[in-house]
Image 1 (cartoon, one colour):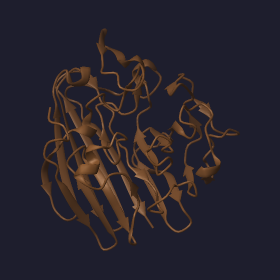
Image 2 (cartoon, one colour):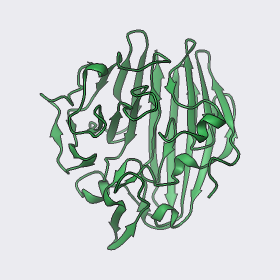
Image 3 (cartoon, helix red, strand yellow):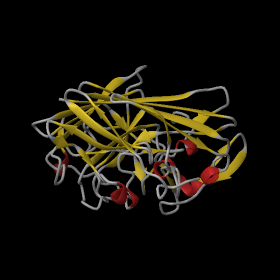
Image 4 (tube, helix red, strand yellow):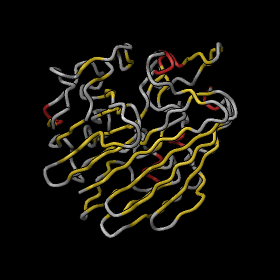
Length: 310
């Protein structure tokens, strides 16, 4: 498969209040400009993009987040995946969807459609998977619709990995984050234990706005948050998180069952942005009671993520 060293293309979506730049490499959002401020941390040019190792603004897959040991069982057969995060598989492996130029099927000032074919055996995954990412800009709202189909049983869990900094520079330590989740999946060494615990009374409680600069989650390797929240089991797209710096407010809505909150403690500029990754739970193949990420022929994978700014 081609990597980002090949042709890089950048497209601009614009509305009366918002300007968004999308790159074909990794179907990435490079910038999100509102009121004169670019609110995304990360590379802005092709040269900077080639140096990125933090998935800035990218669509991650086949499976976003971690699979412990880089192995999983599907229909009684064990598959071995590329290992790229200590002993674990992370965000699709050594060359995931975030590293590959997607095909631009169509693009205009308010909508861009990108697609990618992942062949059988890609990073160890079975089946040929075809995925599509559609970004639509309307007013102060950017919507990402993700879809995928396969010709053989496989796994699929896509997310967008944008890092948000409503200040446009410096860190996001002055930001307040609220997550509409009353439970989370505790971890050891960034791998879920399998438990689902209430956030009440813990540092993981973000049910009311909390200042990120004053919060650290004790079970993460990074020191800040890198944790999966269990979202309400309400059908359809619903608001799940609110991020504010006192001047601007970003609202995230999705139909995903989980939200990974990562405070960017390993970014080149530590805590330069916070990632709010709408997803299925980490290490789902090893936890049968977690929402399944199995995809089978004849089924459509679909995920929607909406960001609105005010």
